[in-house]
Image 1 (tube, rainbow, N blue to C red):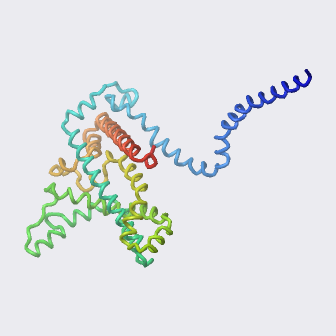
Image 2: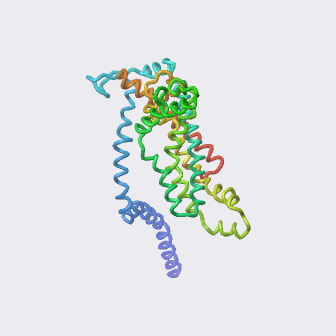
Image 3: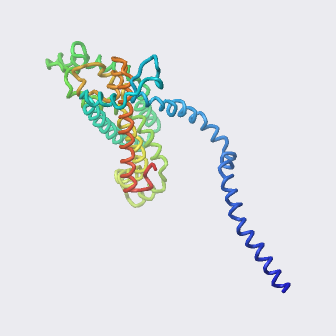
Amino acid sequence: MQQEGDEMSVNAEASNRVVAAPASGAKRKKSGFFREIRSNRVLYAMFIPITIYFIIFAYIPMAGIIMAFKDFNYNDGIFGSPWSGFSNFDYFFNSGKAFLVTRNTIIYNVIFLTCYTVFSIIAAVFISEITKKWFKKISQTMMFLPYFISWVTVSAFVYNFLNYEYGIVNKILAHFSIAPLDIYSNTSYWYVLLPFLYVWKWVGYGSVLYLAAIVGIDQEVYEAATIDGATRFQKITKITLPLLKPTMIILILLGLGRIMRGEFDMFYQLIGNNGTLMDATDIIDTLAFRSLVGSADFGMASAVGVYQSVLTLIIILTANWLVRRYDKEQALF
């Protein structure tokens, strides 16, 4: 009997340890988050400025969304102004500009993103294949330089080059007895000129991103291909480009997140308030800016911004869903 009692006490102690084990594990799990912060406190401290930036400039301003549903006036302020329901959205859609600016914004951004991706990859591959270090550095510098030039400066150069009366291009054409080009009165030129200027300014920045991905590729793969007799072109098409696919997908998804955010600086500085080109170059951002500056219609401008953000959210969720169906590992979330 005493032996049986000892066995029962041992079993009871074992069961108590088993029951107590999850509790201690849960306690460790709870304290794991704080342990992670404590062990990587330097990294989290470096992240604090970015967190503060997004809280101040991204999350707090989201309260201003209610202006899209209010009849704003200065006396009552943002939160005290009377509610207007969807009247601001009705005015935007009934103005006849909603479809036009949405179409222009999507078309231009799709062209920009496509050209930017293609030429950035081409530039990165070409730079990676350059063997002379001095020539590689000069090429990268020359390609990256336009990134630092503001659109104000670019617009001044473009105007002096393409002006109808005294532009450099028309002066050269006149010298050869060729009719001058009226760039600022013909919309067809801008369908080519705007993507060209966008790629010229941003391809250097994009090539750096893809070049970093190329540098990260294991060189033993290229060495094995060389042993197998692969040519340089075959290495690019069979090794470099396929291994760039994950980077390309991520950058395209991030680019789709801005597909409804037009390059406001570029369009406004290059086109301005040129009524002749308005229908072909007007985007959501320039429409919202004119609504805000020209008529001080804060409700209309806010409604346009909300409409823009909702469409962007739908596009990025749809694109990410399609990528997840193709390859879950390449999706953002």
